[in-house]
Length: 225
Image (tube, rainbow, N blue to C red):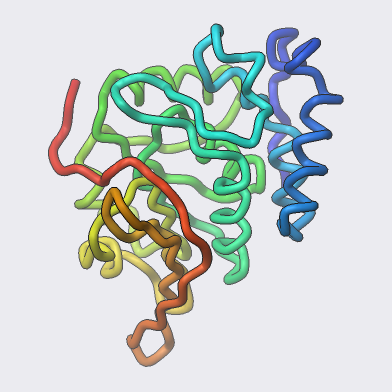
């Protein structure tokens, strides 16, 4: 079941944040290869302009990453859609997101009816994300912690989505992935990164495949207030 959003006037949008502009973004995503209509509808529904600074709201429905402070970004809509589409191929119910950021990716997952757990290392970003998600009536569990540790207390997860790049997949996160589940993550350094999907098979072995070239901020250890 898709959760209903609390669409206050600021969430409905107008002008460059109107539904017409959102629909144009969805059309561009479909033209660029996104096929899952549920994902496209989630992108259409979630008010991305509420997840960026007010000064950037008119650019919210461009297919580009935007700064959200603390040297972090809200991911390009195509990347959000592609990662979500890849995650949904194994029909997850409970998912873990590493790197809450603005809260936008968590909102897209929640709109799709998934049980979402999300971890963010930067306290200020997490507080803002929690406020946005509450305002939209989304039930997302969140934690201020080092994302490289994951959230083992609530594992295993049917799907794990990592929104920051590490040189290699993090073993602690693979350990929290359920058999039959998929982990979607950018892998690589500043010069070259690839979006990778790791699938855990019934015999405990894993299969990796490369999905697309991407650019993400680095996955760092520790926490900040």
